[in-house]
Image (cartoon, rainbow, N blue to C red; front, side, top):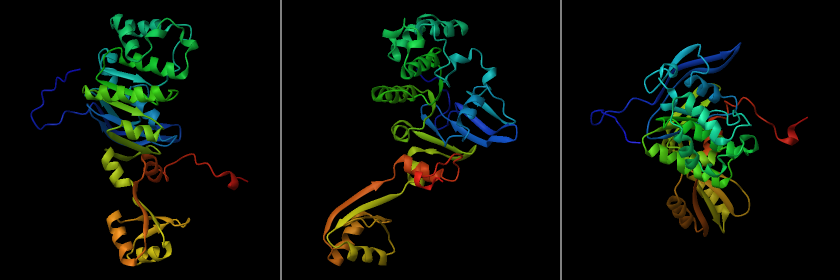
Amino acid sequence: MSSDSTSPAGAQDPPAIDVQGLVKAYGERTVVRGLTFQVRSGLVTGFLGPNGAGKSTTMRMILGLDRPQEGRVRVLGRAYPELEEPLRHVGALLDAGAVHPARTARDHLLCVARANRIADHRAGEVLEQVGLAPAAKRRVGGFSLGMRQRLGIAAALLGDPRVLILDEPVNGLDPEGIRWLRTFLKDLAAQGRAVFVSSHLMAEMALLADRLVVIGRGRLLADVSMPEFAEEHGRGRVRVRTADPERLRQALGRKGLRVEGTAGDGFEVYGASTDEIGLIAAHEGAPVLELTRTEDSLEDAFMRMTSDAMEYVARPLGEVA
């Protein structure tokens, strides 16, 4: 898809999705609280949050399926209900199971296409794109969850939209399917589309997303690029093994460095580089067996950031009465 932007050099295009001050309550329970963020074209934006954080409700409000008590949403500069032939502008997958089981994959897509004045040939094209062409004449009731996810993505692509909104599209996909989806969504973003995707698979999101929007209990916790998130919320550390662990531990402590772990001859040091630790070890005459720099995974950083925003927290088995 080619960009038709006419913005002056150096000017930033308007956001593909612009969420401003959203508030949504069901009865006395407020699930989205003053939420503001933007999703831009040409990027895969990951949407993260613990269970009950308000992700699905927010996506439904973006698509005009739920109405906020306060705030507004603009998609490509307009409220979703104001878009003419919206499937040509926004493709969405919210529930892969929302398909009549007696229809074939092709017939399902033809129904969606004709309801939105989209040419029939697009059904075959998107089935090819998502790898379901061999199953085009099979009834959806016999599909696996992963196949239903692919069919839902195909339906979202029918109108060749500029914006894609996908809620947990990785669910049910096997490792090959997950790798395919990662490459596929990155390619769509590279074409200039905005891809807004939620997932609970942190390791996969770390490989997929260019930018992260993180919410907890309906509030915005972060709206940053992936490198910014890692820098702000991750923790670097150095794994150390030495022939004289006690001497080196004491020397590192005197330098004001935090040392954790006491198993055998190994421990972890925070706040210093491998070179700095190596010099301290050499000065102390403590032979070094290993110096390995590691960084927090996205999951580690996410769990630490959202620890106070989790609505459902399980206790270890030994603590259950």
